[in-house]
Amino acid sequence: MAGLHVRSALVTGANRGIGLGLVRHLLGLPNPPKWVFAACRDPEGQRAQELQNLASKHPNLVTIRLEVTDPASVKAAAARVGEQLGGSGLNLLINNAGIAKVNSLDTETLESMTQVYTTNTTGPMLLSQAFLPLLKKAAQGSPGSALSCNKAAIVNMSSSASSIKEVYFWDYAQAVSYRCSKAALNMLTKCQSLGYREDGVLCVALHPGWVQTDMGSSSGLTPPLTVDDSVRGMLKVLCSLSEKDTGTLLDWEGNVVPW
Image 1 (cartoon, rainbow, N blue to C red):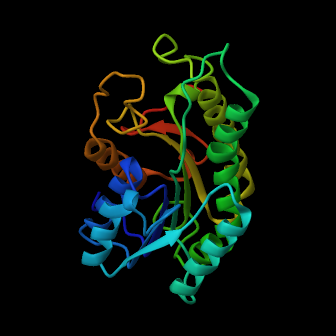
Image 2 (image 1 turned 60 degrees about the vertical axis):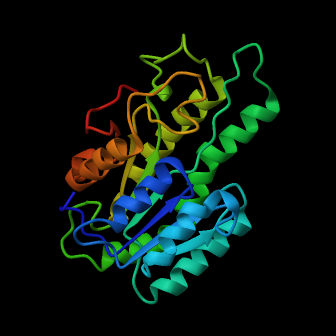
Image 3 (image 1 turned 120 degrees about the vertical axis):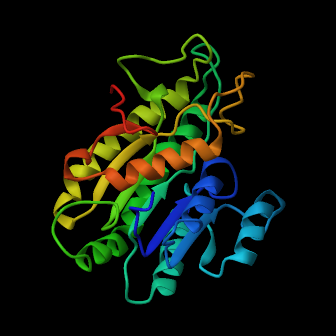
């Protein structure tokens, strides 16, 4: 983890679960970012109490109001971050915000598919588009041409449930809309890796593991991974990423997850 040296990072869905864990661990790095932006729907609300407590102790933590499915909110968030950064760019965009519905093939609906896809796939696309100028600025201000998370990167939080080859955990939860949205997010990541390579932006999809969060426990089973273990592993993976990894889907230990 000591190898991650970024001046700025933004995490969506940062008020709880993996997002909050990422914020906490970024702040706790030996050489923490000058700015950590924690984005969520209602940073002043009751569900963001832990985030507010962190912000009161860390002057380099800036909370951002963001609804990832609302283009106006995304645009306003990018403007707010750009203003805070001054003339510098954003090194790390972590698209973590996501939702899941445990509907089966028989109970899946248009409304559920649309809501989950809009949040899990379209949201990261909108965020990446809005923050691309700041990511490009960070890449241009970094020495060397090799891609890395220390330079500029988009990290899309995916899932092993997106794997078309393996279809993990089908017997536990069909979660059709979730699986489809994350499979589409993997393709978005691949497209971004091709489209943003010349801009110096590394793009990767990460599977955080089956983690003890509200979402991870929604099936009624206890996941094996704690938030701290997952986040610690993912940050270690981010340190090691290079040009060969852009456009791939990796898990929290750095293993390739089958598409």
